[in-house]
Length: 430
Image (cartoon, rainbow, N blue to C red; front, side, top):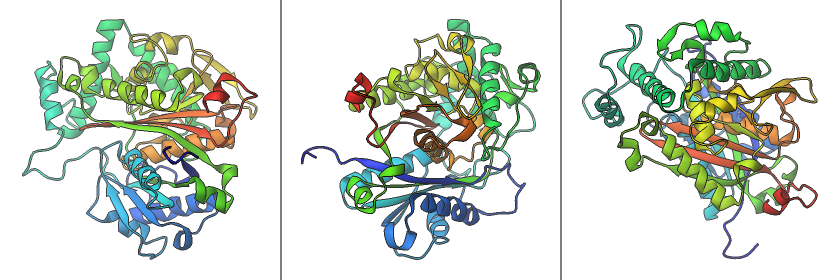
């Protein structure tokens, strides 16, 4: 390795709990983290007290130092614990922080923990100060969004978040003729994928017609096109290349080959609901990942994207370079269903990509502080070839998109350690 090269960083173990609807299981966040963290450590073959020298914890709804309290369930080692909160991209932010720590060479092995114990909807805890996303919701109103709640069963925070993505979907429909059927097809795909995911909150295939006729939350977003809130935890063990080799962890190692975060741009507060909901941020983050890795969208085999609503997945087809702007609806229209070697059915886009084989947020559920690490876990299982009936056969490169309003878009590219392909163009890039 050249002295001026950036040190490489590897995920060597992942774990998670099943995501559960809030208040359906008697557990608290330390219990969740103990399960997910123990699973990740077991997966890596490492010991918390002996091997981990830094912890990064992610959560949104909780008191200060909740990361410490959660990590204490794994042992009292005195290592530093850092806490992150970037709304729905908190866990990807934590992973990026751990990667940065490893590449700084100050630490060799990090445990990344994401967890959330949620209310039934999104909520605001402080009313005596400026809320950080008020700027976004005020701009949404200035662009013409309607005043008031989407219905009387939700609070203002939940209402405004749903409204933001609904208006982005409407804008896309006006500009590019996308339809509610496109959104339903995406939701149908994700619910079908989730039937084979033991960690998913919803493990049920919903007929396309049922999705179309499910209760309307905010036109054109229907209930089964939306991610349910959930409780749960996910974790990852990341380390340096030297540590990985010294401990003999190459077999299950997955490299983070590129990772970029982009926060709000001038376009976020321009004239577009689509940009206000994170499109341009994701597009720039993806472009930077492709540039720094030397890869392109055509090298990617599977993606885990932030489908808080199915319309956002459609927008990400375009932002991440799977198709041209405005062609996201056409991409799902032309999708084909394939059967993998394990007998599972997967939806293939453009004869190339499987998006959200986990079922995505729409089926897996969305414990905000854990979501990005759950995406990381799925991609790691896929690249290791152990995802069972969800397995994308021959997967070598995975891409992750995680987004938090307020705002941060994090895009990550992964590949299996020392992956080769008989001298192909892809192998030369990797």
